[in-house]
Image (cartoon, rainbow, N blue to C red; front, side, top):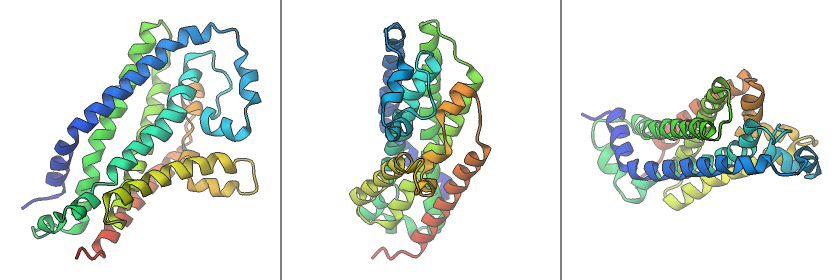
Length: 268
């Protein structure tokens, strides 16, 4: 008899190589980003004035609430967390999760698994659980790389605030996984599921920035990025607990919805 943990373990083992590659690339990105900071900080540029010259939509999407790039924490928010983490890493996890169920259906192997004594709901849950260690590994490795990198250039970062960024950032990535999982249960083809998952993450990222301070700002509430602000977390140490609650609720609701969709789906 198999259960969701067996499925999670098997799925995670299948993805170890990809997780390792992504982790190495992200650690290298962190190292390169931090290595540039000393020369960046010595540049004779008024970065506050430069930021104000950008369109408001650009500031919201790629700068966030940061107004000072001369400190390492503000620099990391703009160069690493606001763009790389929220958009690129989030899109990767949504893309990866897009193949969780659709991949089985596409290969006609889902029916072979489901003839065993396991419900479709537990099957979907097992697939979701397989991605949680991947999120944790990437999250911790990037955290360690930032701490080590800051030490190598003799810059100080408040560890408590850095932990906040990665804790809430990890929740955000789990939401991205849930979005990919839902797409994977809706579409039968992997490419369609992955494309839809990336489209949702990228589209809502833009929706948040393009609707800020407009008559349509309420639409930005549909975006996950509305509930996480790396600048507030890392620079100011402020936690939006309401936003954290939304991220947790969204993850749970989307996983339940994905299981319900797959329960009602015809695999023939």
